[in-house]
Image (cartoon, rainbow, N blue to C red; front, side, top):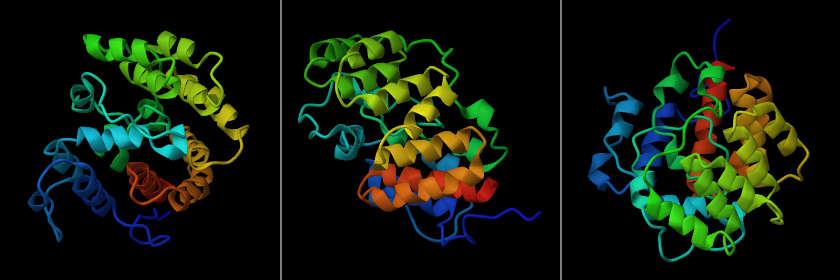
Amino acid sequence: MTRTTASNSSNQPTIEALMMRFLASRSDAGSSAVESGESEVEPHEVAAGFRVDPRAAWHDANYTGVNGSPPAAQLPTEWAILVGQPSSAFALPMAAGHFPQRVKDLQPLLTKFNPAELRPTGTQGALPAFAGMRTWIAKNGKTSPLVAAGLARTLGDFDTAAKLLDGTTGAENEKAALLWQRGKCAEALAAWDAMPESAAVQFNRGMARLFLGQIADARPLLQKAVDAIPETSGWHTLARLYLAVAEIHG
C-alpha cells in the first residue's frame, strides 16, 4: 500500500516547511538563518542549530487557551536554561507550563516512528539542579498552580505537580497531562475523552491517539486542533506537525 505523504494529502505542508516556519517564528536566531527553497540539510540538523527564544516559549506555556490568564512579565528563574536543554520531547501534551518547542528532534517522527518508544514511560528521573526553578514553583504554586504544576512535570517532579493540582479548579487537562507524563497514557486519553471540547483537549486527544498508534483516529482530531489554535501560537505549528506525521504514517 502506498503511504500518504504530508505534501499530497489535505494540502498539508511538508515536514521541512513546518520546521522552517517553526524555527523562523519561534527562535531567537536571525532571519537570515532560515532560507526558503531547496536544502540538503535535514530538518533535525537545522533544529540543532537554533536556540529557542525563552520569552516565546513562556508565552506558549501560558497560552490563554490553556491557562486562561496572561503570562507573568518576569520569566521564572532558570527558565532560559530549561528551554535550552538539548533533550527533546516527542509526545507532548498541550497543557499549562509546557512549551511546544521541546519537540526538537524530528528524525524519530519522520523515519521509523515507533509510538511505543516515543511515549513517556514515567520511569525517567527528575532533572538535577534547577534549584531556582523549584523555588519559583514553590513560591508561585498558590497563585499560578497550573503553570507551576506544568513546570514541575517538565522537571520530572511528578509528586509536586500532583500536590499543586490537588483541589485546583479547572485543572482537569493538567491532571490528564500528568497521567500522560507518568506513563499512564491510556488513562490520560480516557480523561481527555471525557472532557468538554476545547482547543487543548482536541490537540491532546489527537496527540494521544497518534502516539498510542491509533493514527487514523488521530487525524481528524488534530485537524480540529489546527483549526482552533491561532497561527501565532507555537501549539498551532506543533498540531500541524503532528497532523503531517499522521498523514505520513497513516
